[in-house]
Each structure stands twice: as C-alpha cells, then as structure tokens.
Length: 280
Ligand code: SAM
Image (cartoon, rainbow, N blue to C red; front, side, top):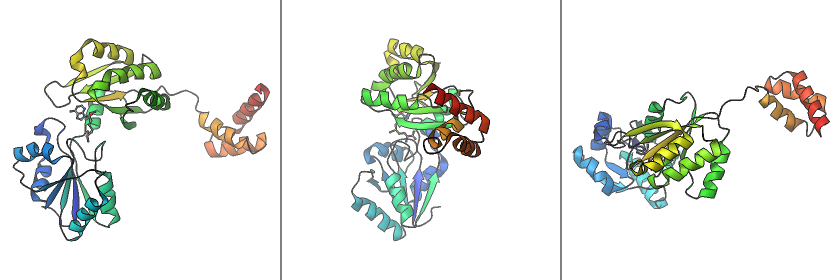
C-alpha cells in the first residue's frame, strides 16, 4: 500500500473522528514510522483506529540532526507519515521543514488530503470563495495586530484567520475598528464537534454577540472576513505604473509606456499626469 522512501503528509480530523479518511488509516498502519507533532496527543487517534506504527515527535524547530535522521531512514527505504495534532500538516502546523528537506534530497512526498479548518470554514461561510487569502493567526500583540489588519484593509479577496479562543473577542473588535463595523465576518467555531457554531454578521455586531455570550469565547475558531469592496476605477493599475515611470521620464513618454504596460488608455493617463502636475 505504501511506497518505500516516501513521505506521506497525512491529514487527520479537526474534531470528529468520523472525518478520518480511509486512505489515511491505511497509510498510517502501513508506513515504517509516523512523525507526529505531539506523540501523546496523537495516541488517542492511533488507539481509536488500531494503528500500532511507531511514532516519533517532529517539530519544525526540531534539531537539524532529527531532520537528517528522518531523511537517512527514508534514503534507506523507509516510508514515513507526517501528522499534526489535527487537520492538515503545514497549515499553521509543523511540516514545512521536513517536506522541504525531503524534496531537496530528491525523495518523494505524497499528500493524503482530509480536513483543514480553514477550508471547512470557507465552505460554509457564504462569502466569495473564488479567490481568498489565508493569513493564519493574527499577531498576539495588539499594536502588531492592528498594523497587520491595516495592511489587509484594502484586500479585496476573502480573508481567513485562525484565532485562539481567548483572543477571539479582541480580534473581532480590532477587525471592526480597522475594516469598519459593517464588514461581513463569519465565525466558524468548534467545526465538526458538539458545539459547532457558524455565525455570520457585520463585524461590530458579531463582536457584541460574542461579548454577550462567554460560551462563544471557548473552543477553536476560524474567522472568515469579506474582502474590501472593489473600486470602480479600473485605471488604478495604470496610474500606479504611471506614477512610478513619471519619476524618471517626461510626462508624455511615461503615459505612453504606462498605457502599453497596463492596457489603460494613453490619453487618460496623460490627462491624469497633467492634473497631478496642476495640483502640485
Ligand atoms: N492544521 C490545522 C488545519 O488544517 O486546520 C490547523 C492547526 S492550527 C495550530 C489550530 C487552529 O485551527 C485553531 O486555533 C483554530 O483557529 C483552527 N481550528 C482547528 N480545528 C478547528 C475546529 N474544529 N473548528 C474551528 N477552528 C479550528
């Protein structure tokens, strides 16, 4: 069932053990070794699915010697599965370093897809999902968090954040302050578990709802935020290019070149340049 010298990146459930995919069970039973974020945590999963494969702890901050030892084992023909405490490894979880090292060693990496809280939340958020950004955890320190949010204020794609329960309320308040109270936010909490809650409301309203019910400040949570409204000004890219070029080139030349690069009409950019000149 498993190939030799191969690293399997195996997703595990984010709460409900019924979400474990059959192929994940087979692979975990068949590999020579499981590299787990926390072997004690994963013991329950292993017992539940009758998996007796030996586990070793793996973190991205593990010693290089440990990564090297895993690669050595794989070069010798062993197959290894990588798991994290829940969901898909590498998604705000350890794994990047070992996957990078395995590929750099010319060995094979195979995904065994399954649950990930970000995608599960997006799938029920009812927000535009054709393009989205995954931001992981917001910064724990408020000043840094506000700066991070300011950088995302104009982002037009749907934005996904992971959040720790004790920071959920302050984060919602910060989102309402920076993105505006009316920005639509979806809180997806305890997905696949007993107290699963998906609540969609404008940011300020959602913050008040969470503040009024301390139960909502418990458990694991994903925030999915509607992107900023797109401006109607489809010449903004051309203007940005023009601004850069006009620092070095005469107005006419900058307008012609910016028009070629961006597809925005030359005359429009030339007029924009004249107006700017007039303003200064
Ligand atoms: N690798 C995991 C994945 O694929 O979703 C995420 C690991 S990250 C360390 C943990 C965060 O994921 C939690 O703080 C929470 O934001 C989110 N999360 C995990 N399980 C969740 C669940 N059942 N419901 C809502 N959010 C969850």
